[in-house]
Length: 257
Length: 257
Image 1: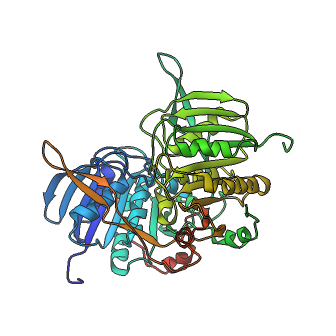
Image 2 (image 1 turned 90 degrees about the vertical axis):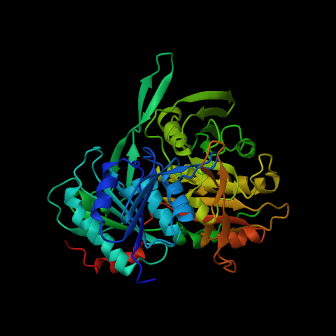
Image 3 (image 1 turned 135 degrees about the horizontal axis):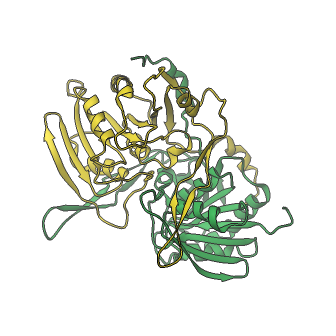
């Protein structure tokens, strides 16, 4: 096994044509055999969603030495599941989501299709990393972050990650990155989340938007603090969502009927 | 405030017409003013997804004393966000997802639209509960679980939940429930996840299916163990996904570039 070239599965939620995906593939070139299975169009905000009411299909887009690219009609998580089932000759050594056009720090982890990819890889027992740049521009400049992207991927390929943990890597929009900080998820919230429009035939429609509020802007150990101070924020994520600190209290509740 | 009737927001991922939603509303009758904002059709597996590329709309379905029902074109999480923004006169006292037709225990929490509802309520600081019955049948028999549904809701209305925690309540398909167990999320995995079909014009399509494997079937503290032994499984969930146990180790990594 260890004599084989590493096998790297990549997906995203911005779709197979996104610049962030293209520069990620270029940046990881030489680290192993890369298979891309990405949605055939944008799936921003797809979270961990799966396609249960319809079938999905996939198509080969391109093939060259150490790089094969496929597109899929499903969600980011479908892409990972279908690639593992259908495309890969063995369990990959690394699953990567990204590079996302937009911030997936703090509570955004719950909505992120990029992190959907990463959590799915993690659920399958594969070391997994999500990369996001805090810039929604379709032509965002990913260059400053790319040395970090490669370094972190190399490190995880060499050392792995503890089972059922994965990395959420977010990078601020700056050309003066100060280095890496290991962080926890920031306590933050979205408010005023909808913009109303009037349909020409009557009634309102609503676009999701909103104002992001950092509820602990001075907490230096958080991912938002790191981003706001020009650091690469690495937040380790776990897939066990149990609130262990609540179990004892709940056992004292009288819930008999 | 405390003289007001409690305000309860309900959504689900099986859609506004699902039996599980109807029996939930009936079961909670009298506990307060209920507002339902549910998807206009099935959204199983929607997880925490949000609609970012299209606008969403909502419509009133029915209105009676202490119960108003709306349907929405968006995801389960959209339903919660839009109800909070547009429909409710104040922050609700309780957000409920369900009753889901199907199991949301163990790793299913990551894919569940029902738990998407609950986690969204929790992110907004509202005590939130998800209810699921381990029976996918559209005409499933919810009766055995209903006393527990009401009792748990009453308890949370009276006592709240610690901030940023919520409850994932799963109930086995049995008429002989043994009571409640407080659990942790089971280590489990899905495998062999796709069924292939052949398109009449060529090529394959894939339906998501799969085999669920419990990786720790003898662990009595897990939600799957409780379900397999005819208990109501209550798993407390937290929205901080940080893998705290990994932070120290990661700080020793050399990630300079």
